[in-house]
Length: 356
Image (cartoon, rainbow, N blue to C red):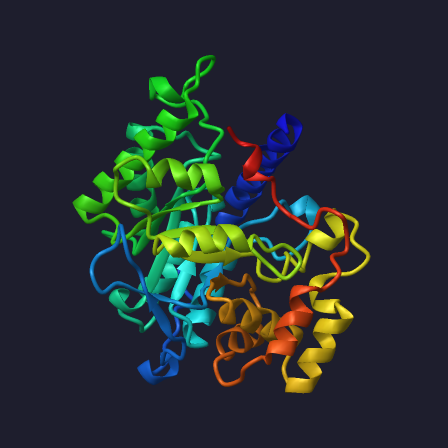
């Protein structure tokens, strides 16, 4: 467990260094001068509950901008590439951008939104605080200010605690080694999130990568429930009992890596094939006249998830937001549910179940 998490956090550092080096190439000269009708939204939304402003709606399909370690290959995001991707996604009809303080691409995303013809109130921005930065009350408040500064906005629509741990080099006594109280550390962090919501710096707050016991801590704390839990979810890795548990408490289930990190995970994990090259998925896609990516997204949406496909390809963005004019049959859904994973452990990212 320890080696896995150290490797994961080192990946964040490497990506940060690569992203910082790439930022120098970012300029403001490529603002799009397109008519407003070119940005017409085509993606339906779902309401958020619990720790959310009344009436707040979350678009079902967003743009994931999570970076990768450039040594692993794949479409790595930085300020320059995320800026262009955000502009393209808005042009494709998308209205939700998913980022994080540790993705090191928020400045580019904020610049793209300002330079687009889309009003800020029509763009749903999700960001995240916490690991691989510290958990803790004051740490969360300070990181929130960094998020707003980098995005150059007075609020984000949704702010998430990125992981339930490790707590990092926190200023909070409950979060500091050698006597870390993980439960109190997370609850102190959640109290800070509630403060952020009350201040109007976020219109909704939630969690990410929280497993049953982490979610349960909040549900039995007497504090307001989170609006969202964002977790890894794709046809090779589904935690449906956790989804049911969240939905029973009106916590929207937001899946990330809906294509199983198709661009790098199969190579990094030595899989024999990627999700989008799965023979059964391709067969179902052909039957519907769609791409495997559209079928994978439609499968997850029909299960009741909101999804964050990551891409820098404009044509793929258009495909990703246009999945609402067809429906998979029950037989299709069953076949996708029982796809054979390419390995005994098809989970891509570190397992938060191992975090105390």
